[in-house]
Length: 183
Image (cartoon, rainbow, N blue to C red; front, side):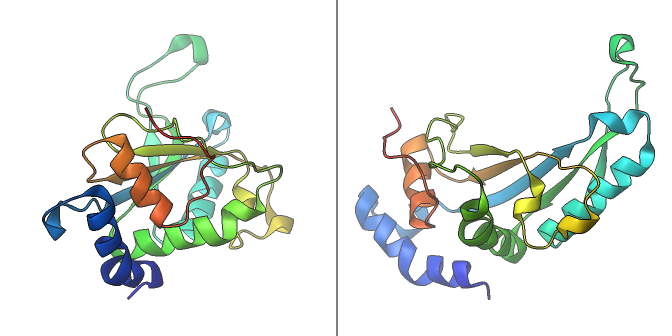
């Protein structure tokens, strides 16, 4: 069992239940999935860049990533429908907790000039999104073999009813937020 999942089951759930004033243990918010997305706009000219992005995302997440394809043609950007433009991976269960553990404890502290995550990046339904400018902050990526540094988007989906519950859940996983409260 993942260290973070074990910590959630044994310690965090009880603390959140009392902190949020919930009557039932099953009302306590939990993580549902984590989606990691990497857009590769230059992939329309060179398909090897898409393959490299899929390979990097697979290394980072520990699960096979898939290519994302355009849904419709946009002539101004020279994009045809069905053209591969990025990579994504959806993590659930054990892999999700392993990834979150590495993100919080290893990758985020390696970000240059980091001052805390923005607490306003919730969507109103308890889901949190963050963007990372350099995928090389993950230790799985060999910096010498990287041709181009890419950014990625990470979305953490929770079962929380509102943003404050989701914020408390993510704070209990030691996510380093700035020191303000969600409205």
